[in-house]
Image (cartoon, rainbow, N blue to C red; front, side):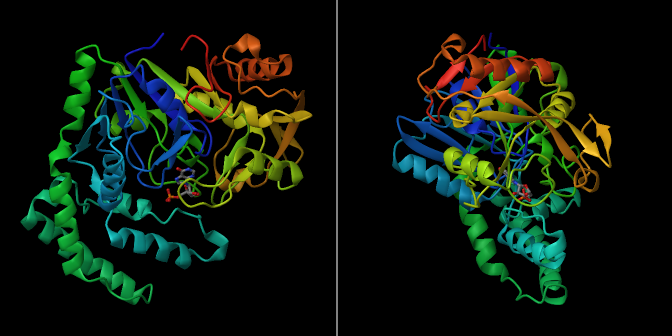
Length: 428
Ligand code: IMP
């Protein structure tokens, strides 16, 4: 049964297939809201064999009559947003109405420069492997109370004052710390004003609109980006992103109170992947991991980087259930496991010979753990045509039931292929 306000989060390290799940659920929603992150995300949606990758637009944009909102918690690269929007407009596929929070912060070119420079400065040993989309530096400005909002782009005087103040400091940093050339003010200011003018018709009060919709009994889907284990508070710090992809972030990033939330859906890939650096206890650097990468097409939708691949980690998943209050699972890419003789699943870790059953996200702890695997039987059948749970081969059903049992959360949706229709719904 579809409830009114639902949050959809990634339960692993991002790239769980949230875009396809949002797309599958958007048909039953009235409003779809992005609440954190920025163009570091890459939400892939495949409709009628055609692939769309949304970096900043909500994944509901292809549906006629929906309201798609970019909430205050998102950091927006306005040029990227405009080009994504214009791309859809040119194809006549911007079917939803778009509203952008005027309080969302703007990613400027200097944020991207700083993102890259910071990575070099960290050195090989401590590099995070960011997407270099300026996400971290933009959130730094926000929390340092020097950020520039989307609303500011429509006020030339305010923009001039804030941008010149920020650029003065950035250029000092670039010259004195990073030995890089300064960035010129004029072009950046003119470009920002120009995109601000083009995006002005879409700006508004996102929190007001979402709450109004909820008050009218409309169905709202809050779409998380990245994943729980990349959360700045709950992820494998410091190898995380700079926002809160966990469920609580949805309330902050949209201005919807926690009492309004009816359900938290966690998107879980049937195995695990990670892009960028940081601990990954169940990573498989051997042939089987490579097999998952090839079969699952595990290359970053934003950066094209090959994703690190490995096995489902139930220690981490139970943690994700806890910190998100997850009460429903959407399991994706189950079809990728077809043909796997046996499927490995980590149920606990060993650290210095001692058992560890609770996930401790700190990178320094996780780097030392060794997963203890259980082997489950695989299946050979192509499952992409299955449309009900009962049609799945016995071993696939058992794999799903095992996940439910260990996580304590029902699997209510199963992805058996990349397309919109390749989905099994179980009472969702
Ligand atoms: P940032 O978000 O660009 O600062 O990158 C921080 C970390 O999060 C890096 O390891 C990135 O690879 C990872 N990351 C950021 N966005 C995504 C995403 O959408 N999917 C998967 N990983 C991501």
